[in-house]
Image 1 (cartoon, one colour):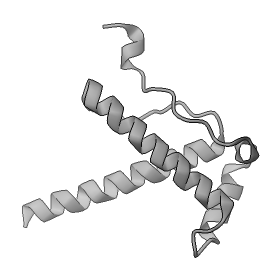
Image 2: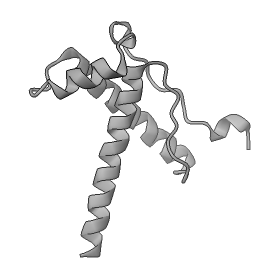
Image 3: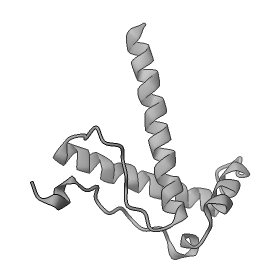
Image 4: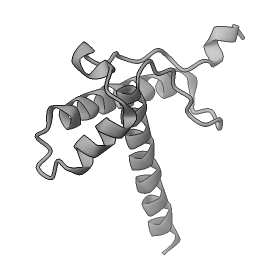
Length: 102
């Protein structure tokens, strides 16, 4: 197996206007955006959707590894988007597993 085959794919990039924001500012913007209309929230959603689509393609081609997702990120907003998607998937997987047991 090629060494690069074991790496997660490079994901889409944050738009330049958001790349310099700190993780703290990003999380504050999201927490204070009750309607989901803040441009920061919208960028996290866009990145999350792109990341999820890329992840699905990767898993469809390579299978799911038991290792944790350690996606390469270039700025804090990409990190927040990935963490949001991972938390979403974990929450839904947990509730699905709990439903199977009942």
